[in-house]
Image 1 (cartoon, rainbow, N blue to C red):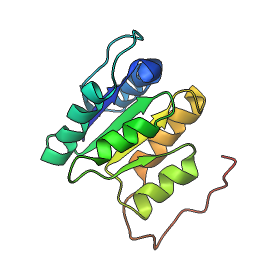
Image 2 (image 1 turned 60 degrees about the vertical axis):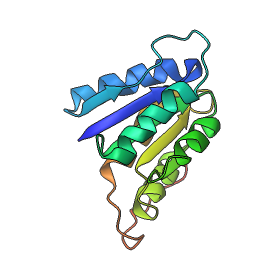
Image 3 (image 1 turned 90 degrees about the vertical axis):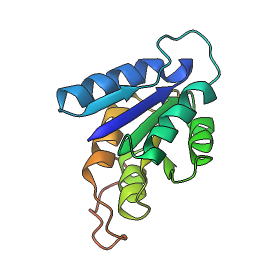
Length: 141
């Protein structure tokens, strides 16, 4: 699976950790930047990541920022993108099972790196099924 990544400066560290994890799991990653924690405008990196999903170049995309809110809104402006802002594995699970989200947004200032990696794993593992077979998980996971 090809996965696009995009972030601003506030999500840079998590993007790098997520990219390493994805590559180690055998995913192909297209990194749209940014490539440091130097302040940048997030749409310059989020929109190209979203466009790669909308065009079919990448099957899914992950965007990051401080809160993840602006990044999700920016990605969702691209026709064909369904970007979910997730803050735990429950929201990640439901975004796939119920909504068939093809993009994920995470806020680096909102969750721990460990939680962010769990969110990504859950989001990648759960298929869309119209919400019929949701794995029962605790919000505390």
